Length: 429
Image 1 (cartoon, helix red, strand yellow):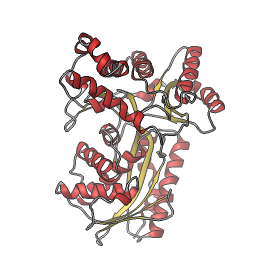
Image 2 (cartoon, rainbow, N blue to C red):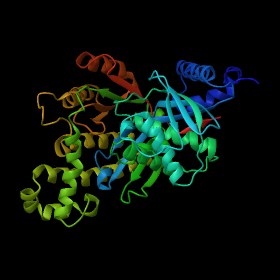
Image 3 (cartoon, rainbow, N blue to C red):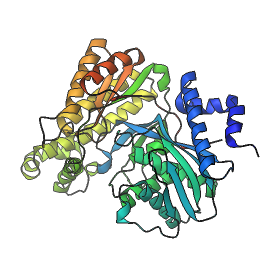
């Protein structure tokens, strides 16, 4: 039987369009990705049987609008990116999932007759495997064992949803191998969120998983968080000759749990004073009419964060409208406005526990100066904030100069150049 690797080598002409849809059309990138898949197939066939495996890819994601709104039932705009987690997998009959990852020396092994949560698994890939399998079982989907080798370009801690990419990848494998790809993407996303919340022990919304599953640019409305409205926005980002960049400014996330938790808590505190549970259930006018009472009961920062929520929701709508109209400059203006609001009103660019360390704010200041010098582009804090990454939209001709600047201030390799991937999770045929 001819192995999968030989088939790929012989049929690059048909494989190339598929890889190009995931990673772009540059010959160098295509060659790198072909080599990446071939290495993983060789590893799989060395570790497991010579059976022809299946190939899978799930992308990371970047948030481009709606900073800290989903937890109060707001709106977000996100996009899948060209960095992904891939797998070579094949079904087995021994009721066990075995996964080798290039990042770990030992395999992750989960037996499917023991799927209860285990505290010893918290924050591990084993927890995600067990959680995904458990939810498949709870929902009545078919479940079975498989062997897999995985490789990820979505690095942990990058703010690009490495855990969500793995969750969606695992769900896609089980969907393909045992459920004839009948499970819809929104359900796969909810399964991933369940695994992260209950088994990985990390509270998160559903934005990351939806963006990784659906792919492209997606607008998500969490007014009903159990059934969010998801709309894919058709826009040819590649035609703009722009790159999306994230800059890792460093900083320690370990002591920031209280900072992250304070954002939804304070927004909900404002809503509670007005007899509601979340900010989506109140209006800007409600806050302004009761501002004196709110200032004394929940404080000024909570009021500012609620006002950010209302404006950010409207910004997402304007971003979507601009993309639909093909007005990229208007879209970039809204990206800048989101960044300004996050910094001044939401206040998630540095922690008050250590005001001497403000890497995110410094990176934004340097980027704004750079954008002023070239007369175009946009930037904003990326993701949860307080430390970590910023996002910049830059014309491609300026990427090298900008990268040199940021790496001279932070560290070599701190800048990741991304592109928007039009395809979400996928089984490669």
